[in-house]
Image (cartoon, rainbow, N blue to C red; front, side, top):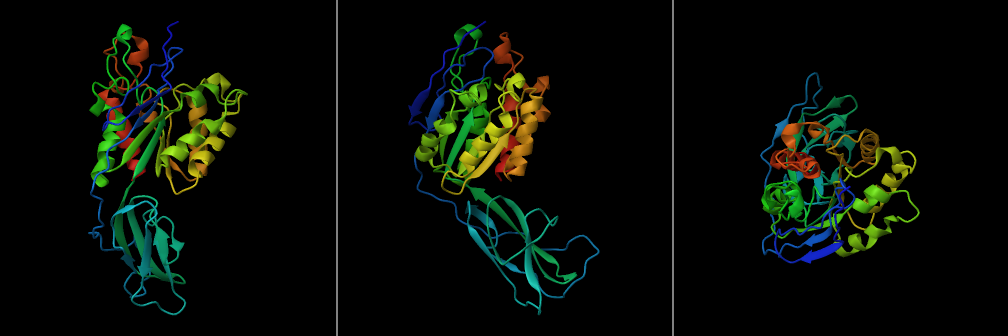
Amino acid sequence: MKHYFFIRKLVILVPLLVLVGCTRDYPSLDGPRVVVVTPPAATTPGSGSSTAGPVAPPPPFDTLKVPPPRFSPDGGTFYLSTPVRLTADTLPAGAVIEYSLDNGSSWLTGDQFTVLSGGTILSRIRAGDKRSISRGASFSLYYKRMLILGNSIMSHGPVPDLGWFNFNGMAASAPEKDFVHLLTGRLRALYPAITVNLESGGSFERDFGTAAYSLDEFTPILKRTQPDLIVLRIGENIDQSLVAQRNFEKQYRQLLDLLANYGQPVRLVCTTSVWDKPQSDAIVRMVTLEKGHALVDLSPLVGQRAYFASQYKDPGVAAHPNDAGMQRIADLIWEKIQ
């Protein structure tokens, strides 16, 4: 049995330099507590006008022959929780303003909402069973402080005996190839001054439900980093034989509640595992969706050799995502971030 040493905390003040500690208890995927702080930039994103115009819903539909409500602001890139108002030029007697966050599958009544996710939002006027055509506006979100809770897929230090020499997410070929840096690059394009904090979720993966473990480990992290975006990228170290025994569902519920309600608006994005973890992944899917958070299902990677680093002789390293796997993880998370 191989044993890795584990570094609990490192603080780096260099843009995008991720220093990492080694895992322990092979094939554990622990990552260290690392803080990556991007120097503040002077620029902030501005809003822009949406190119989307009136959009007709699928027929059949009744029309009130009135213009759909206008958005203010009319689409663009905005900070999380930016308020948006809907204004109607004409509102017939008994009619209401409605908006849809899911491309018309469901509609909410109201003339104001806050931007909590990116994408196209639709507006319309409805009076009884009659409704106007709909208008669309596209919104993108930027964030100021991202916190990633992960393991060695997030960051791992060199282990020369295993043929691993990098300081980045194992087993990406270079720092800019791991999912952390790929995500950070996209987020920085929207908000150059974003700070990125990396913290280990390994203790939760291994020790959830034990008397020695407490979710309180995350409280000072949240207080210090004040994230408005949290990516919960864990799962590989969860022993499936302990999922029911230690009541993983209860522990995961409590973790999400802690992260989502720590004191300020935050977007929480949760992922499943890139390894075959059917019991814990089923709970992650159920609880995440039940609580209304963004779910990133990484099952398309499970068992797909093209996404893993088979070029390494050590099976622990080879079990990690390669560059293609890291890109796929970043792409799937990005879809849910926006």
